[in-house]
Length: 158
Image (cartoon, rainbow, N blue to C red):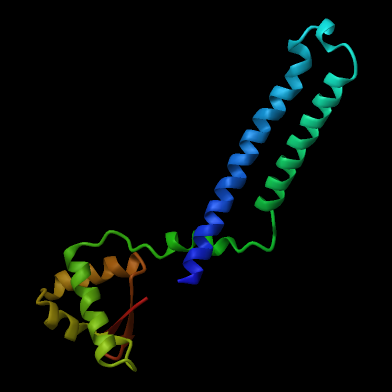
């Protein structure tokens, strides 16, 4: 649970750093255009130039801090992108039935990660050809793995 909060906090900090970077860049553009917009008569004395340099320096510091945060090599980006990799693809009802049977087989006998294809066909009630086509499609998508074992095949979850 702490990891989830840390990951959420890191996402918020990334968002804030990107937002600060965008706003700082916008301010930088405005500050660069400032002397061109005002006439030379309104910039008499040193006070406007000191204020201008102070704002320009502070915006530069804010942009530098944001870039430092976003490019920090010690940050673990894999934690931020981890939930995207664990999402299950859209599965048909038949594919879900096969996965449920394989999962229930793994729970009942934890030492065995696989199941005979013939036994799987019996439990699902599919015809041999339908089961073969379905398992081939699931194997191509990387959901399962079939291993030839003698005259039969063993099916296991990836």
